[in-house]
Every structure is written in C-alpha cells, then in structure tokens.
Length: 385
Image (tube, rainbow, N blue to C red; front, side):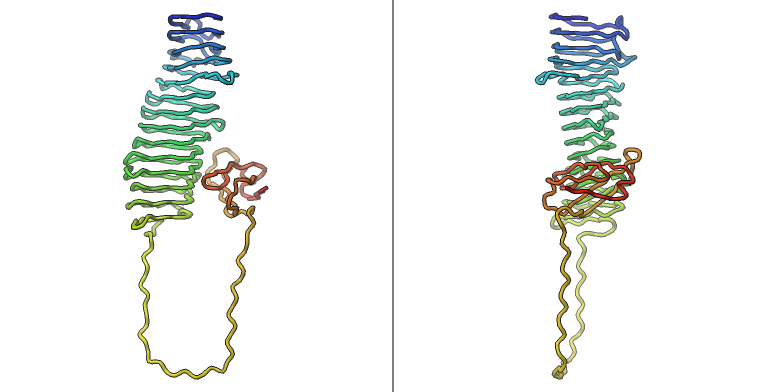
C-alpha cells in the first residue's frame, strides 16, 4: 500500500508484484505510472491523481479500479486490461482519455470521455456505463457494447465490427469497410465511396448515405429495422430487414429487399428501382373510343335511383395499435423483438407493454420497440396506458 504521497517522478509497479493487489490511497504521481505487474486482483486507486497511466503487462489482464476523488488524465493500454470506476465521488473525473494499443481484449466499466483504438484487431468491451466518443483508426477493430452500456459518438476511418445490445447515439463510417453492425442506433452516417455495411440485428432510427458516398452496398439482415433511410448517394440495399421510410434523393438507387419499404419518397426528377418496380410509376395514356353520332334519347319514365351513401370510415382511438411487427431473428434465446405503432398523433405520453415487458419509445419516429418472450410476442397482446 502506498498512502499520502507525492511522487514527482515516475511510479513503477513491476512484475515482482505478480498477481498481488496494490493500493494507492491519496497518492499524486506527477510523472508516469507504469504497471508491468499485478493482475486481476486489482490495482486500487482511491482519492489519487495520475497524469499518465501505462499498462504493459502482456500475459494476464491488469485490473485497475478508481474510487473516491481519483482522476487519471490519460491511460495507455499496451496489454490486456480491465478499467473500472467504482463509487467515484460525484465530481470526480475517473478515467478521462483511454488509448488502446493492443489486440488483446480491453474491458471498460464507467464513464469515459474519449477512447482511441489505434491497434489493428483491437477488441474493446464496454461492460457498463458510457463513452462520450470512440475514435477508430486501425482495421479489424471490434467494439462490444453490453445492454447496460451506451456510446454517444463513434467515428471510424477503418473497417469495423460493432456487436452487443447497447445503445449508440451516432456512428460515422468514414471508411469503405466492410463494416458489421449490431445494436440500437439513433443515427448512422455513411461518408465514404464503395462502403460495404451489414446490419445484422437491432434497429436504426435514421441511416444517412452522404452525397459523396457513391456505390454504397447496404445489407439489412432479418432482425434489423430502419426507421428512416436517407439516400443521397448511389446505393444498393439488399436483405430481409424492415425499412419504414426510404427518402431517395439521387439517381442509381436500387432497393432489392425482400419487403418493400413502408413508404418511398423520391425527390423531383429522381427515379429508382424499388423491389422490382421503377418509381415513380409512368402514367399510361388514356385511350378514348371514336365518337359515334348521337341519337335522340327517349325521355325516361323511370324514377331516378337513389345514390349509394358511402359507408362511414372506421374511427380509431389514440391507444389503438396501428402496426405490430415481430422480428424474425432471435437476439436473446427465447425472445423476439417487437415494434408497436399507435394511432395517437403524439404517443410519447403513453406506456406500451407486450407480455408484461415495457417497450422503449423512439421519439423521432414515434414507435415503441423492445425484446419480448417469444410466446408473448406471437400472441401480440399489447397493453397501452
């Protein structure tokens, strides 16, 4: 244990520690703290201040825990590591910037400002908490966001794989890929030409292909749902996923999915091939028969027939279900994803449950979604209150 100390130089925790535990309590390191020993039994830092933390051990993960008022300005991970924020003070920074320079798995739990992935095949697992920004600069990296995890922004300049059931606010793909994506996304932006993207599962509120991103290939697999697909660059869309609305703003777009989009909106003068049909559809000329000479008509003695009255249109309550969709692919054994749309103009004030499970609400596209036990999902009993 090192306690109540100011280290003006560097601090070294060497392999002599092996798998033992190390505690730093109220310690300030002005130089660099280098960990080449310790292990899963943890390096505990409580109420401590470190400018630079570097983990170099290769053969076993090093677990570092921040507690209290601890602040680590920058952490450089050159070997397998687990970084945990536990019982931090309300205003404490904990881990701020993390740089991953190893293909070994790195696990994070807590609140992180920025994470850099600069090593090919780097593997990052966000077990819980939030990352404000992830920057990916090396090919073959994988980020796994667990169900209790969220990422505000990710930008990649290299092929990338995203897995897990976590939430993503915005993902920017600035490299051709191929990219494999799964999760709950608010927005995905495709910026590069010849980009290949596969959405294997989850949902995307809005997916945008930029104007300069020509010849994009987008594959939507079974259990994938896209609320709004905005195509500003030449794109081919395939697969069996669901598209609620496709906004097509350029020529050369082909949508060849198994199911047609719920709605396709084309800019003026733009044509597209949507599920085998060229849009907009060409109007056929109206054929008129040659006029025949009119013969005088005899006055009618019959009474005029009453005009049929149109049947009244059915009315719906705001809580009535307008649309109920079950995803085909199983994310969790024994469960299926469901999407529910109400007739309410503003459904944000309602709670929707299926099989006793409260669904999440997508404010942008006004639908509810979630993962439900399979039998309950197929029964389709929706409770709205």
